[in-house]
Image (spheres, helix red, strand yellow):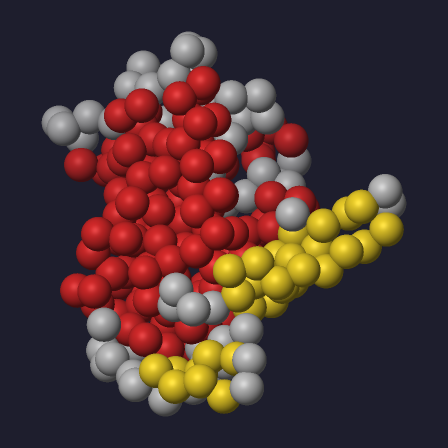
Length: 232
């Protein structure tokens, strides 16, 4: 299932969402300039390597912040940024730019920590914004239960667009991440096939659910207009 857009219009321009996308794009294009050996070293230095985290070395914890701006390929970065475009603007609208930025970064740090705890001895770097974006999804799940997600479902190679309630779409997504994470615990690296950090997704989503209300800047009145929900 590929999300196309949601049915909620943000009240304000999502400046932080777009700045985060720009920052991820800049780092990704920098990665493209590196040699294979240079890229491998770059990811090893700034990705979260659970085995390298040490209480005696404060600098070893910096990758918990930097890892969320690194990506492993075009599909990785595009899928993450597309998801952030769809769901980030509304969450930022509810939290305000400063609150949303703090929430996003903290969500990414927590997601990275949970992934590291799921495989503490792993030497495989974890990279990507998906943990932070999962926190955004958790907040969206709680803030906008009446929203719907326009979703593309390929049906016998033909496009089929359906409106799925956000609670259903994100609920199914979370259950799939939880199930995959449980399977990943059986592997030495803590990731399943394809190298996906499932527990970062699970941890980020739960973090978003639990703390998103602490970052709310305003609570708009909910009104209905035709078949769409708008925050005012």
